[in-house]
Length: 273
Image (cartoon, rainbow, N blue to C red):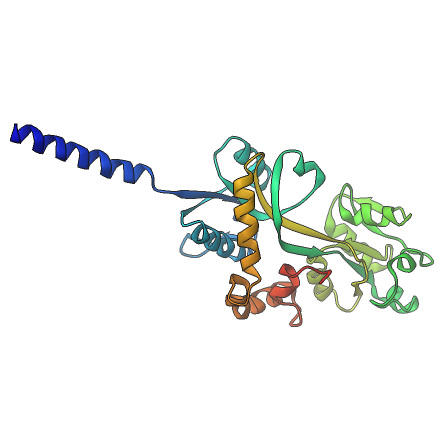
């Protein structure tokens, strides 16, 4: 009887230990690790970058272990829909089309819309950031250029100006440099294009629109949406993640954008604030 009792105790202990192992909470986060300095694989083959820092902090907030699932951007939402991952943290822009497929958290990143302008045209038209956007797109001989089905063509169209469509962004930049076209609308990447072509381009920051990025979560998982929103609020607190990594990422972001005046705040603070 004693042996049977001891065997039962051992069996219960084994089942208990096995249960603890199976119950380990893991947060599976999908992101596309091809976009340094925001998300990439470092020299030691580890995920790194701003999005990774956010994912680590969220997993810690949830008291869960983090598993980053490297996923091509086109497959992020399908991975969420099939349950392969719990959440997408990958600088995913909130759009109406995506809202039909997933739920979104509050924004945690922002992308301002900027125009790269031919320098001679910029000077001839006396363009400045104080110029109203309607006045900007009403300028004489304005000739926008851009890629089809992107903001480079849709934003000018919103203001009644038809943009020339090209298939390669390099072609658009070349036309801006030569003056064949004079306006290219984009996000932060046009800042890099400007500093690569300072002698022939200027930047116009007067377009009031911007994009926001959020965590993508499987439709109907309101509990996770609520927890994500609570976490995102902490990012902006005095002792939150963004302040903790600000010094490091101010340097990284300014190097990336080629502008010493633009740091972490430029991509994480709401432009309307």
